[in-house]
Image 1 (tube, one colour):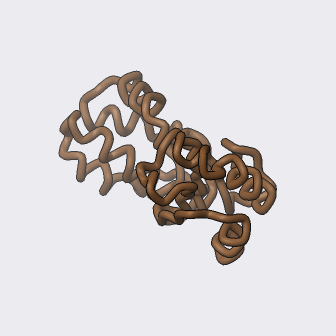
Image 2: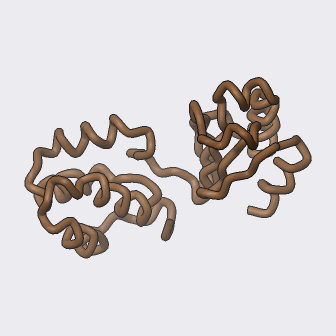
Length: 156
């Protein structure tokens, strides 16, 4: 992600919109690129995206709200996801979440005021053999313990 909380400017996403080739089928890719740039999808960008891909703004909004990956509010530079799936739960996932909340001083679904962290929980991260698992900025950490959690998060 380039900069979380970057001020939205139309000219900043013109290349992203051009890469969409005016094809509605590129909507998710365009949304991902805008979110990568800003850390979220600014409301001001929805109409521009819709116009460039020849879809209605409501269609853009519908995709944004359907997929949990997309956020319409600024998120932290470091996205911390804790798995709440069955394997992680059985192997201590609840404790991983509690320790993570304590280390970050955040409740799940919240972003720190300085936009350094966002804490999310997910139903499954697809790495059940490594349970309990957390992902920080797309990097998977398995077999988490309180000590490992602190060492991973204090380096960020």
